[in-house]
Length: 82
Image 1 (spheres, rainbow, N blue to C red):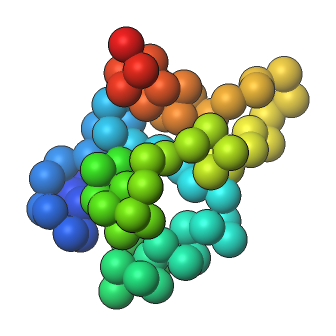
Image 2: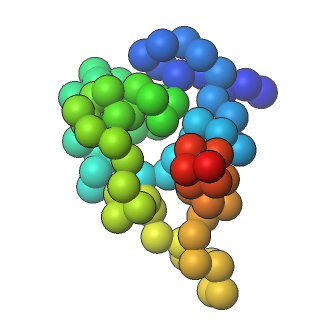
């Protein structure tokens, strides 16, 4: 199943343009984008809606013991910071 950005309609890839935001921030972003919190936005559209670049402090903290960063957030940093 493909995950499609509800704003630009591009496919969202976990190793490139997907991030998991802190829940409170995601609710604001989704509201401002006019979508449900169960829908998805690519990282570029999230930044467009927020009016700024995504910061590591925006990420949802990992709930897995011993895992510091959620894998898609780590991949986003590698892909977008290289």
